[in-house]
Length: 554
Ligand code: ADP
Ligand code: ZN
Image (cartoon, helix red, strand yellow):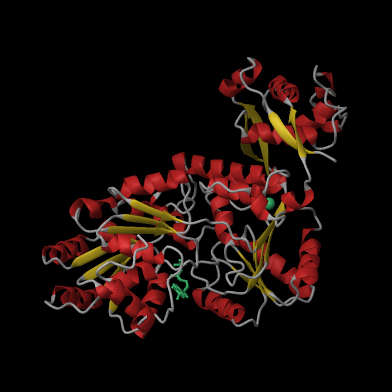
């Protein structure tokens, strides 16, 4: 697909320079354009900032007819249209909350013989709910003026993705109605299963896939245990490494954003907060101040970040556990767009996991703007979505608790990409500290822990189980007479942290399940361990061994 001998090559190059002002193509841009212009369905996985827009805007410009672009956010659409109009490319958009007369105007133009628009942007809701739009597209198609269908942020189609959006599923109708119109699906994030899901749901046929490595060599990753002194640690980290530089601190709740921002201000940083309950003008103001470097640090929920193109973000700090590895990868991706070295630091504590899990189950967690369209009115999550979210969160936990494997491998495996850890060149905490490791069989410990959960009636938290295992005689232990349980104190001899790593591992491996229990004290949440009998059976019958890697001291 990289050939320079397509009939359109000359026109392509000329317009890339003249209209878009680019001197050359970036990785995969020419290939994607050639494939879609040859009439194939194409699926593009390209990291944020890779230049996806050009791969459909340039074909739209040089092909006859109108290119339909489905994009999830009106704000993103408006931004795109503004750029297109500046480049003298006629474009329009239709959204659900637009005045009817305004829509009529656009329809009239689309129906005219020489329709001037090269691109028509719509939101997925519009496709799902507007028969008028579908009729309009049929009309264009009958006149052979529907050039191409572009689906931006295509991962929103998939329930396995971290930004699932039901209206995207309705987009399957487009391929049914217009089987001969090439579809171009684009995303910056997709695991193998998400990709399959998207291809299926959209009904793409013989689709050509372009993907490039999602590794970002200039980002340095680390996970740091989160303690009560976390804010002091963050202050110190920034002062020592990124003083007066630009960064984002992702926080779990709106209140956290405000608390963290206030504290950093007290420490002398130019910080501000950003979250979903501020009014749009306020948010735009903060974002602008940050873009102009009047503010260095934004303490934000995941609501912040879409469509942000600041090249010199030097650090992304996660004050709390992200919801998924995909989401984490994307949030980190906002650092170092200019290719300069930047830090991605995640503060992890197990209690944050419990908190995030609870917030997910209650549907009160703030979502990225891509997904928030549909969850705002739901008070609780349920069914498959909840299951997926919990699964995604557990993988994030095991990412954090892994202190052996290269962070890049752990992220990229999840995105369906193999990575050779020698390429990391010690730019992640694990590669940096570990000279070698040993693999240890902890099946015996695992059996004891599962047994202990059963013996105590599957009513207690992991920390309580660990206390009993280590032989504690605390008041709580005595209150429940757990000092008399046969496995009390059996794990006394183990190195600090070992039993807890095994226990965490059992949870992430799904041998033990953690159920969230709300306590009577307002807002506080605890969880109790339950045994997954099916999986436990495998363990006790000897069909399953549990191996954990430990760094070796040599
Ligand atoms: P994505 O949608 O993949 O995140 P964009 O399409 O927004 O990325 O492109 C990111 C930036 O890169 C934009 O500022 C765009 O103008 C620029 N860009 C895209 N392609 C090229 C190119 N071939 N040469 C130079 N700049 C480019
Ligand atoms: Zn590494």
